[in-house]
Image (cartoon, rainbow, N blue to C red; front, side, top):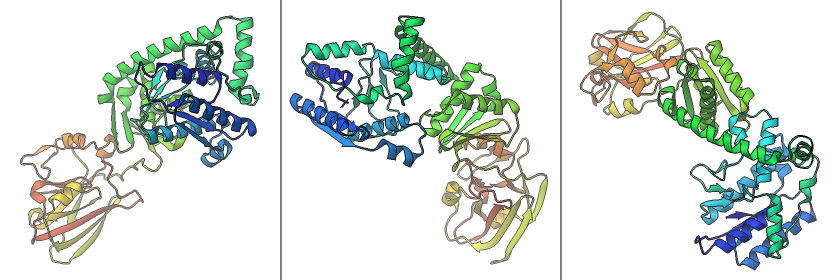
Length: 469
């Protein structure tokens, strides 16, 4: 799919791809979005693109959308950013409906220089200095894997695209929006870069594009180094990323920032609106070692430091800490059918009832994500102990024939480090009968037709009942 505005860059791109289509077996589809803020001029641009596509015998998708309404509905502060998001959303939809594997864009070396300079002015890190890639994954909103972004003109100047169109006798449109002083990119293109070229470096555009190439190579190297550390540094699951604070702080500062950026991207889907100031704030939180502190990041992402773990998740998905369970607490178990007991233990309320198990409890307990279970009453005895883990604890998870270290069970179950000392354990003479919220011991699984102990442990301080594994 070829994105066409009707200007010289995208027109040159479309004509060149059309001439190469047989050599490279290309199937082309033209797409144009009327941004609907330049009135009749924008309508004329759309009509021009339609005529161009028709003349080349190519299918064409054209739509009209309001960037101001898009900006207001989504709370985007920048009009330019809102227009860009709206445009990419349109292109993603057209690409999906037509089965396009790539979307070709007419960005040139001049656009690359402007992009790098804009990122530099905004205080970007190394990622921003890369500018645009010739081939890149779709940024948003298309979930990966989506179509590829293809920018074959990144080494070509704008003057070259206009010259190419003239050599073909191909007219093109001029967008008056490119001269509106309200847009920051236009100020950089029309004022700042000409000043730098006149007063400091006549080849400033070449210098900026060279900086982009160098930054790209260095980011690629750093990312490959980070990939070696990632398996031991981070765990990712269900929209949550957890980073080991000691391991992260042991890395080189450059790797630290890249790791935080990768974690944020994994949660948010991309790194839009994540600035160096946010990375610095996360590093400061790590260095402070103030457990329980949280940090609000762009686009609804929150970071929280607990003990030696930095957790990144959306506000809705960031799990709360479980109540602490200091010491050991004897719990009398009910023995008679229908008997109920509610016992407060530390920050927890233990609710128990004797009932007849209607089916085996293995599948239910294996799939359980709440702090409730059904246990074999006869295997428990009359008194149990509720406590947190201790060094050397071993456990026989349901479905296994032998015991294993509780620490290993926690690791395999991806239970967050900061939660492990807070998970209640129901302990009997036979050992750990239940790791609350996660697994029943094999010897404590209820049997169909036999009396079972239905037990629920609820945080008393308003913490969520859901498990966090």
